[in-house]
Image (tube, rainbow, N blue to C red; front, side):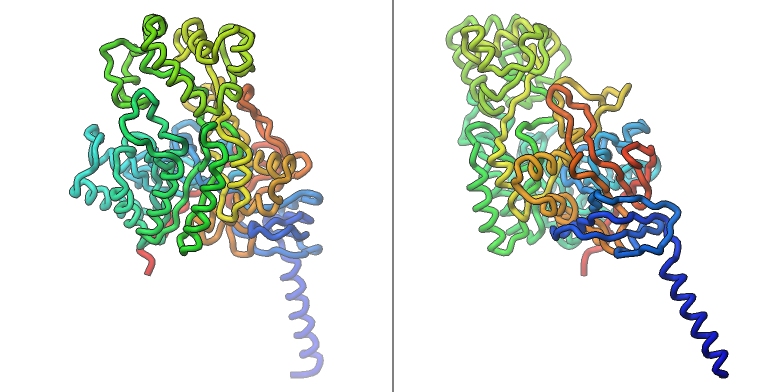
Length: 577
C-alpha cells in the first residue's frame, strides 16, 4: 500500500470516527443537573436518547438530535416509580382520559405497580395484561398477583374463616400461574376483606410461591394502629392486633420465605400511635441485621385514607335488626337503603344513656384514630361556618364535647352522607413520617388512583379527597427536602427511583444509565411544589417541566402531550435458575 493510500485511509477512518461522535440522536437533554437515582449527588451532563433507550451520558457539545431539550438549571432524574398505586382501574378502563393518568403523570410518575391491597383490576392476570396492552396508557405498569383476588376466586362468599389445605393449594397454583404470566410478586391487603380472615400460614404459603421467580411481597398489613380499621371498642372480643404486630408478621414472611418484603404505605396511624416509628425502625433494623430484605414505602402526608370519612360508628345509624357483628367493614352496611333512616335511628339511640355512652366511646376512638379532636377538620357541611374548622374549635364555639359535635352534624347535616358531614383527620404525625423517610430502606409511594377526570364518576375528584392523587411525589421533595430539610434531594430521588426499582427487580429502569430505558423527569427545584390540599384536592403540581416514558414525552415544557407510551413490564415468566 502506498504512503498516499495509507494517509487517505487514515483520514477516512478519522472522519468516520468524528462523524460517529457527532451522530444524530432522537433526543438530547443538554446541560442538566443529573441525579442518577443511586443517591449520589448531581453532576452536569448531557443525555442522549434513541428510541426508548438512553444511549449516552456525558458531554456531547457537538452532537445533534431531532429534539434538543435545554435543561440548564434544571434537575434530570429517572422517572418516578410508585410501589403502591391504585391506578390499575383507570389504566384498564375504556376511558381514554383516565388512561392518560394526568393526576399521577404530572407528579413525574412513569411506572406504577398493580395488585395494590391484594386486588387485581381484572382476573385472570392475563386478561388484565391484555386490557393494558390493547388500549394504551401513559405510564408503565408492573403486574402483581393479588392475594385477595385469588382468595375470592377460590373461596367465593364463604371467606370468613381460615382456608382449608385444599383451598390454599388452589391459591398457590393461581399465584404460580400469575408469575408464569409475567407478574413480579404478591400484593396483599390483610386488614381488608376477604384477606383479613386469612391466617399467617396462608400468606406465607402464597408468598413462598413467588420465591422461585425472585418475586417480592408488598402488603397493606393487618394493622397500622392500636387496633385494625374494622374494629371499634364496642365490638372488640379479643386482644386486637396493633401496628407493630402487623409489621412483625411482614418481617416473618421474609424470614420464612427468603423473599423481599415491603410494609406498604407504612405509618403510625392514630394519635395513640404517634411516635411508634422509633420502635418500628428498631425492629426493621434488627431484621435487616439478620439478613432479611425488609423495606417500607411511605407517602408524604399526615392524613390517610383516599376520601373524607365519618367520625361516627355506622352501627348507630342502622335499624336494630341489622347484623353489625362483622365489624366496621360488615357487608350489611352496603345493602341498598341501609342508611335511609339514619338520623332517626341515631336520635333514638343517643337519647338512651347506656347506648349514648357506647356511641361516645366509639366516636372517641375513631377521632383518636384520625389524629385527635384538634386534628379532625370538617371539609364539607351544609353550614359553611363549620367548614375548615376542627372538632376542638367547633366544640368550643358550641359549648359541647367533640362527640356531641359529631352527633350534631350527623343529625343535622347532609341526609345522604354517612355522618352528615365530610370530615378528614390528620392521623399521622410528621415526626414519624420523617423518621421513616430517613431510613435507607424506605421508598416513596402515593397510595393514589387516577383522579380529576371530568365526566367519569369513578375517577372524578370528590370533597375531602386525599391530595396525594395530585401531589404525593412532588410533595416528597417540596416539603421534606425544601421546607423541612429532613432529607437531601439525592436521597429523596433515590427513594422514588433506584430503590423501588431494586425492590421490584426491574433490570433497566430506576437509574439514569446507558442502556437503560428512557423514563426521565426534568424538574425545576426552585419551582417544584405540590398544590393539592384537603379543601382543594385536584390542583396540579408545579415545577415538573418534562416527563418522558420509554423515550416519548408525556409532558413537554409543562404541557400534556396526551401520548400513551406506557408499557406492561413483564417478568420473564420462568423460575430463576
